[in-house]
Image 1 (cartoon, rainbow, N blue to C red):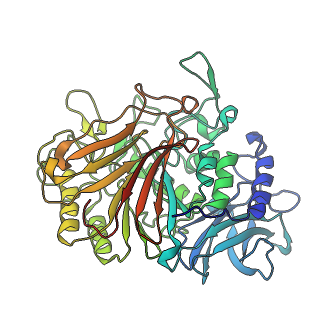
Image 2: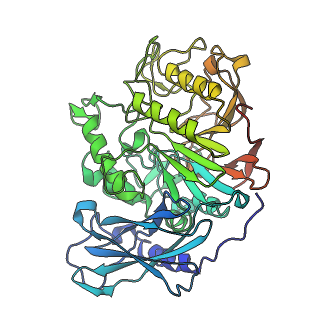
Length: 527
């Protein structure tokens, strides 16, 4: 896809710069808005859009007090003849956040929006508008599609470091003018406290912005909310949110490292003895639903996170949830595993949606990789956290579910499947081929890994040979937990050409440099 001219951003910058000024000193904003403040309602945390389709989208905001959310949209930055949308009343029950659903939008067009916050007792009293923009999905193939993906933000205690530009990777992604950002999970590190300083190997000091909620592991609902607010203290992220809509999934660190349903922890950890991870997960999911505009959970903390996102004739994105329905982490060597990592219901949903998709490309957005070994346990005979469990032989444990899916894709002759993920804190490209595999009944496919966005970087994971992966490219540090100040922060770009239908994947470094490129051809079951 040829480069497109960037949309005008005066309106975006008016809102984002005002928010940046308000948030220069994190202490200027408390953990929760005061219920009695002078002046007019403010939207200091910026705006964001999500799950944008050809004719609809969600817009999010957070107020500093009770307020009525109003959204105005226009085809131009001048907001001549704007269309008005009345959103929800924002209050303490949702941590003063809210999402408005826009519908009936024109396809393939740049939509400019501004969010007004009105005094609920006097609708004429509104604060300064917060501006944003997004493109609706195209109705015609010729327009092409470009998006970026990554994951893992504020991990391993590495927080917003203003001396290195904060979360500057978001500025690099914004320069590509993507249609959307696919976040592959670990949007927060609820289990990762952030201290003001941390020592670096060269004797330097890494300095992080700190808040009360990020000084300890998250346990209460307010703790989880505070983790999401922490990231919004970063100006680059707020600018990005105002320009690029998101497709958001979650993984373990939204709750706790390597968690699974039914897990109970405590004793010798920062958590009280007998802490039920299911209880923490409910609080985390509620905060997630409050801080992201996600179509299936907006206004419904119990809504499912897995979904399919249709982005015009060229692209469907199948957003998985490999956390909520999994079985317990274990040695994962059982010969029967109907629950697996997706759960039976989600697996059947994925099969139906893949079989019914008419998009040229079918991106499977996984929050964990397939053939990379991710241990969870003691040395000797560890448990495993992802799909692979280090045995290169026939599928066992969670691999059985993936084998069933790959077999289905091959026999139904489903074309154009590509797997994208993050999680392992390095970037790589794996090609899977039955000629190299212990399990033979599938068509070749690619899996691309990116991240972290701002977290510790780690050495490359070992490969499991069950599905025949060949690691064609990898960039990773030689030692564990390399800070963002030392590099090794990554994102990926997918560019689908509207004329040829070719899909190009580029793995990029923190400031946008291209590390690896792979071009895939449309209309093939495997390649």
